[in-house]
Image 1 (spheres, rainbow, N blue to C red):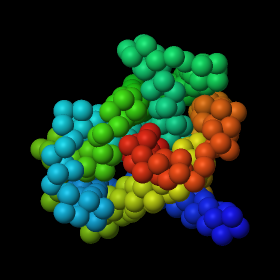
Image 2 (cartoon, rainbow, N blue to C red):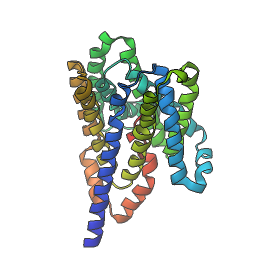
Image 3 (cartoon, rainbow, N blue to C red):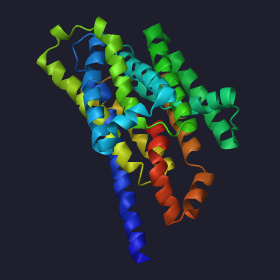
Image 4 (cartoon, one colour):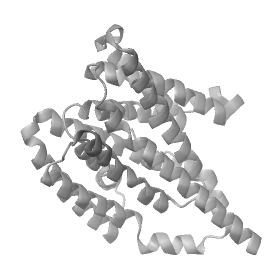
Length: 317
């Protein structure tokens, strides 16, 4: 028993460290984007080129001989997931050009709550009291952030919302079509972004410094982040993944504040804190704790095998 307990503790620590590393990788997006001189379309297309390469390599490393089968088995739901991931990924980097990093990341954190709302409206999913409270909090937080962004223009409000809503659709698909693998769909989404943005991109004008930053965004921020997520989500419960991932929302604005003194508005900070509170309420409830305490070794092993499909909501764009 001691050996088993020690093994579980070690796996738990490894999982927590992996998700921590993923959150740190994700948090660098805003800092890296602020260093780019390329125009927005070139930024989006350039990052996606490197992200597609990194993600295809990750699929190849995990699926090996089953790589072709993994992409072929995506089906129409996998393609739908890829399309909405492409929209979310593209608008994420575009949004960083029009508003603060804090506003983009705080808005992104509301995606699970919007997904719960979509599930209730379109799929008649039951919403328990805890989720209803989280939805109400998230709604207030999003409205506060939107109100604080109107002075920056329509794009500052519209792009973060489109990013978040499209990612919420991805979450809904992932929950109801668990046979769709996350990584092939994510890799495909980056190819779609490149195809959509390449006609508007000016690759010839990109400096060597910008190419290096775009490579870091595609390989490090997206590829490494997803790889660490895949590792960590197999070792710890989804609630822990969600809560640890919130570190991205703290670090992302912190990096640009330290480097560029970029200060979010008071409305963005207050709204963001409300959204973070909503995420914690939804992710860390009594039912989650109780289920975790009742799980035995066999149940944990089954959960680890099922995690890739369930972990999609924690992936970041």
